[in-house]
Structure formats: C-alpha cells, structure tokens
Image (cartoon, rainbow, N blue to C red; front, top):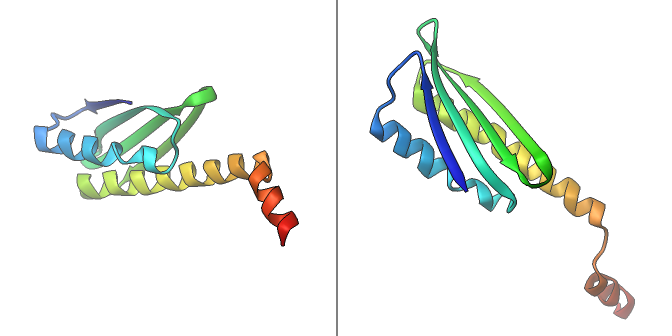
Length: 110
C-alpha cells in the first residue's frame, strides 16, 4: 500500500508525516483491498485542513475532508470519516455476496 503525504501552503514536519503514515497504515484493517492513500495537509485562512483520498481495488475511491484548529485533530477526523466509509463499503460488498456455501450447510443442519 502506497502512502503519500503532501503539504500545500505550509511546510509539514517529519513527526506530522510519521503520524499520518502510522494512522494510514491501519486502514487495511477495515477494508482489505486498499491500494493507496494520499493525504494533503493544507493551511487555508490560517486554519489547518486535511484531505484524504483512498484508492481501493475496482477503481473505488473514498474521500474525506476535515477542518479544525489543530492539525492532529483534523487528521483524526479524516481517518474517522474514511474508516466509516470503508466499513460501510465492506458491509455492502459482504451483503451483496449472499450466504456462503458453508453457511447454507449450517442452516440446513439446524
């Protein structure tokens, strides 16, 4: 999985990049097919803004934006939004697949 951290209108520090990378590495927990994560750290009107784009298999794209007074809080808010989207998508995919063959066999035994 590729993790790219960009900064716009500001200089991002190494601890900030490491924080983003450490948090983004946890995303495959919620959806296995994550291919890449692109995080843009920005300063708009003296307020930190974070935008996160997650690319998954089958050309699925998940986007989240957050704006707050603290950059670390923005990152956490973005990750919460992305994890919610990934969980919802994984549930939809799982529901679409239906009951597995082993699930049918267990239901017939009962």
